[in-house]
Amino acid sequence: MMIAALAGVALIVTVSADPLRPLPSDAGVPGAKARISAQQKAAAIRPLIRSANDCVVRRVAADPRFHRPVKDADNISELIVDSMKTCQDAMRAMIDAHDRLFGAGTGETFFMGPYLDILPATVNRLIDRGSE
Picture 1 (spheres, helix red, strand yellow):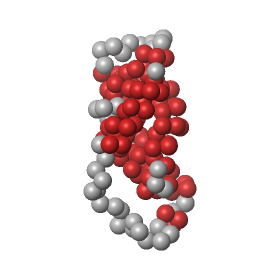
Picture 2 (tube, one colour):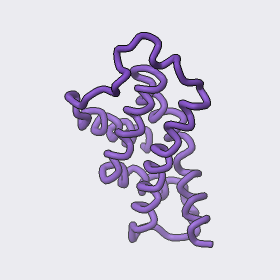
Picture 3 (cartoon, helix red, strand yellow):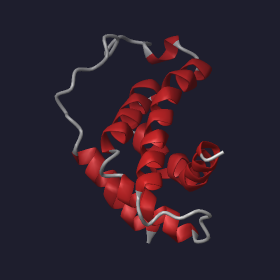
Picture 4 (cartoon, one colour):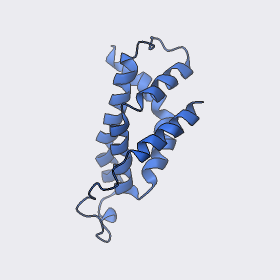
């Protein structure tokens, strides 16, 4: 259920992108992506991942359906899915940056795979940290 909903959200986020948005200044320059290391790329995208996470955490924590402790993993997943529409700009920024840094299409793959795989645990951890 969550995968189907998140796939739908990913489609909405993808469609909402502005195809006329200007490319970075080094776009089209041969070897531009190769100029920075994988470590530098990860450091460059980290603030965008944090921003996307923070948006989801704020939305989940503010949702009246959210109760601590979370006993049902499906409950937190449903709240995360519901937060995606509000957080689509942050998600789109993260996906677009990933594409620019690691290559076209990698952002969507990252979002649908590793990012969403750990998002429920990340949201729980960040909410717990905020309530200490």
